[in-house]
Amino acid sequence: MVKYYIVFYIFLNFCIFVISSENYNGCDAKKDGKSCCRFSHFINLHKIDPNIIAPHNINIGYCGGNCSLRDNITNNGLIRFAALKELFVGCCHPKSFLPFEILKRDKFGILSVYHNDLYTYNCRCG
View (cartoon, rainbow, N blue to C red):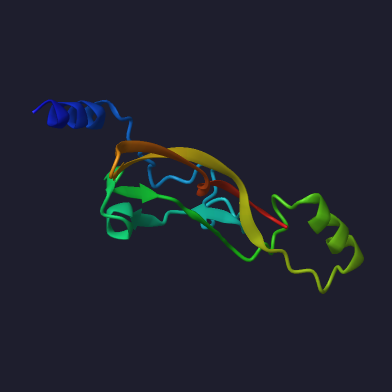
């Protein structure tokens, strides 16, 4: 009985990392005319590993766009653009990530696992 109470207590006090569908870098390709944007991508962690207690669903996001406007471009991209103006095609990729915590059950009990490079926070061209 005590074991179930501890699991229930941990589950209730665990801060589930909820991400809204809003893009954090203020990027709206239709409205703002930016060509490299963060888009929502939801995955079900429980389907990947049934031992995951929380969160079950998470919006990890992904970067997309053609970088035709040369917005949010990296220094390497600027040098390539200056050298090859007509041939330059940038690539939209993640600029930074946010860490998040996963509660997982194993044979020894409940583990708290941090993942640093899975949730895409914002994007840039390069």
